[in-house]
Length: 126
Image (tube, rainbow, N blue to C red; front, side, top):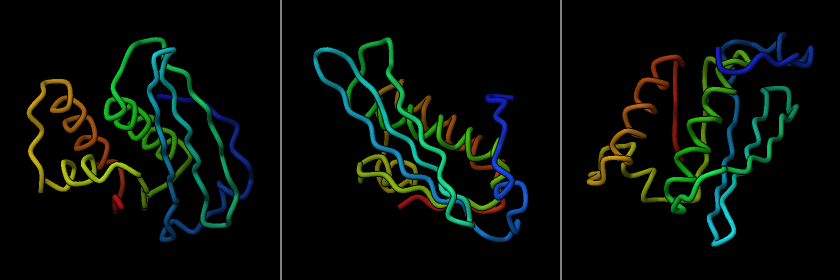
C-alpha cells in the first residue's frame, strides 16, 4: 500500500464504471522541484496534493514522478478507471509508445507506469 488515506464518503460510493480524473503538473528550478496533483472523483470531489522533491530532477523527471504518485493515490482512492492529464506531450508520447525513451531513468519510469496501468480497468493519458 502506498498511502493510507481516510477517503471522503463520496469516494467510497463511486460507481466503479465512472472514471476518476488525474491532473499532474511538475516543475524543476535551481532551488528544487515539485509537483501539484489533483484527483477528481466521479462525483466531482477533489483530492489536492503539493509535493516538494528532495532531489535534483529535470522537468520531465518531475512530471513522471508526479504521474506515478498520482496513479498510486488514485488506485488507493478506489479508482478503477483513470483519465490522466499531463502538460508534457513528450511523456504522453513515450507512454503511448510513439516516442522512444533513451535515458535509463526514463525507461524505469515507463516500466513503473506500465505496471501501475495494470491496476486499473482502463487508463487513458491525455
